[in-house]
Length: 137
Image (tube, rainbow, N blue to C red; front, side, top):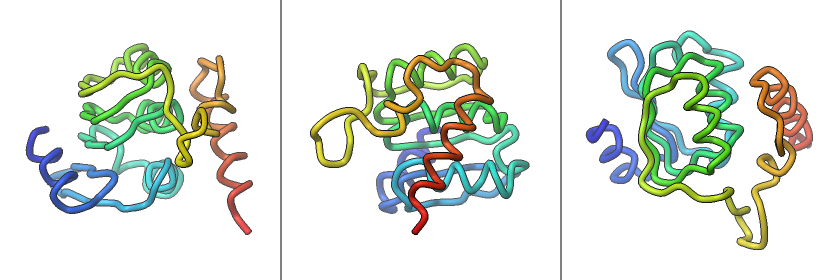
């Protein structure tokens, strides 16, 4: 995982996924890349190792639903950590925070706020779908 974290930081990527012997880097913010992988290429998440900069509840749910085997992240929210632990996804975080802060730094990440106290991964996925749909023009 150290190699994936080094690549994450050195390449300017926001997400690195190692799957089936291939390493892929992604640069979108938020959950967009994980959402696209889960929606369109779910097989790439099955058994994958993931390095992430910031892991909120939405990203954690997508990792768990996708069958990610292991993760390493710079920052993770308490909710995300709980979701991954309950799903049996191994991993580590450099820092655990109560919640992910929004990009403006003025409050909670909007997706984590929408997820709230929902613990069911399928229900969280439905929230993520609605959130992603709301971002489309």
